[in-house]
Image 1: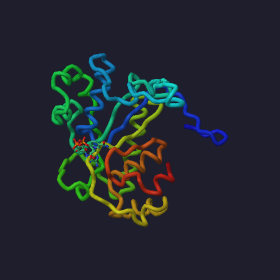
Image 2: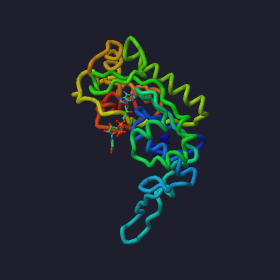
Image 3: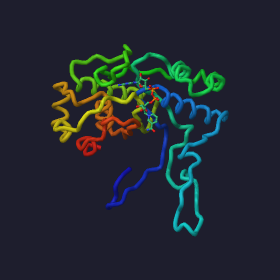
Image 4: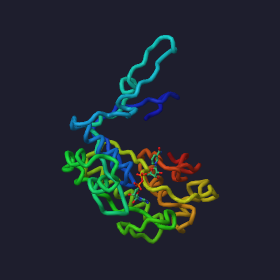
Length: 236
Ligand SMILES: NC(=O)c1ccc[n+]([C@@H]2O[C@H](COP(=O)([O-])OP(=O)(O)OC[C@H]3O[C@@H](n4cnc5c(N)ncnc54)[C@H](O)[C@@H]3O)[C@@H](O)[C@H]2O)c1
């Protein structure tokens, strides 16, 4: 999006869109498998707002209800490429089988594409999600080092997949409740907190910081504090 003379101009989608998902569990793998199945013509985008949702334009009495995709410039599904992070090394096929949301018969039809999507090592701390013990985890002395490692992953993914644009959507496990505090109020405070391993900066916040710093829009799919702090909203 660009702003011209006070108006927001939404650019038309072009090239490839990379969707990066921290957390390749049930939600993420179902989304990925769904998009691939739709692109292969073996499934319909049932329930997808962007693909079959309609919106009212003008007055209720006019009955003008075009598809949202006819009004808003939405990236075509065929130009979407997925990547992500997880604390377990399973590829997307293995994780989707484990999640057991979709039928194995469907997953087997797109197995070739699903097995190719392998997680990158996660930024994780069991302090924030108590019952998980995955070992596929990045090492770093400080939270700032870990955020920088995520930025590097984003850069590598973008280059390797020849993406024009990238977005990130948190699909990881819900973290413990964290109260907004002074460390969340300014960029300087947050970055200082990251360098000093402040306890109120959970992994989801590091993913959000890394994404926003790189101009990658970040959406939060869980009730974590994550990006919902004044500093990150300001940075975005
Ligand atoms: N917004 C909604 O409507 C909605 C709906 C369903 C689920 N959710 C939320 O979405 C999230 C995912 O749900 P799910 O059913 O897929 O759960 P899930 O347990 O199947 O998957 C979560 C995955 O995240 C991984 N993970 C945890 N911490 C991580 C980290 N720091 N970095 C990378 N990976 C990490 C786990 O290993 C797991 O594979 C949950 O937080 C859930 O509350 C939101």
